Every structure is written in structure tokens, then in C-alpha cells.
Image 1: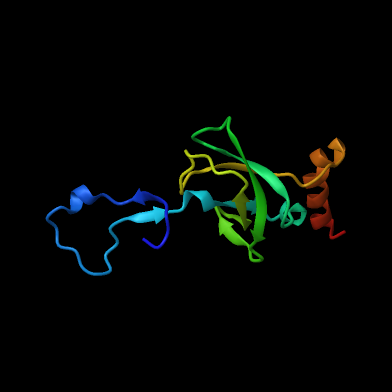
Image 2: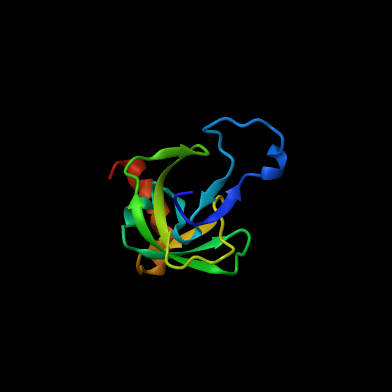
Length: 135
């Protein structure tokens, strides 16, 4: 392999005695020190997210262990996921725990700044009224 890493998929035991061709994938290797995460940010929240902001990710495997990250890239085109428009945001981990693996799921929170509690709780309603009344 051209990179150093850990085998994340592939089982040589099931291939013993089986014919293989040139180009067949036997194993997938990942560099666990350079893992990234992809967050799905709803379109009504994407205006608050900027490259360089920090946040934390909690995986389903270890929800109590938060992994700090930095926003690296924001995809400029929305995608439809579960009948909602979301923007894909790629984040880079500031530390990479040894238990972190590709394909894990969790919840990420981006630190977007401070705002009054009244605005935080009423923002969606205000934006909905603005859209309906075209204000």
C-alpha cells in the first residue's frame, strides 16, 4: 500500500483458494490519523457556519467522548437527505482517538457564536413568518 494505516475492510481467510484477478480489491486501508467527518447541516442553519469554526463530535459508540474538530470545507450546493435540504460540511479532527473508524455515525455541534436566548428559541418562528409574509 502507498500509505501507512490500518486494514478497515477485507478478509483474506474467505479468499484462500479462490481465484483473484489483477485489480481486485483485497483490502481497504485507511490512514486513521487523517480521518475527516461529514456533517449534514440544515439549510436554515448553514448561514451561521464558516470555514475555520470549531466544534465537537460525539459518536454513537462513545457519546460521552467528544472529539474536537475544525470546519474545513462547506459544499456550496444543497443535497436532499430524508426529504430535507442539507449542506455537506467536511470537518477535520484536531485529535484522532485510536477507537475512531471510518463509517461511524454521531452528532456534531459547531460553535457559531453567542446570541440571546430569546433569539435562539424564536429564530425559526421568525424566519418562518418572514417567508410566509415575504418580509
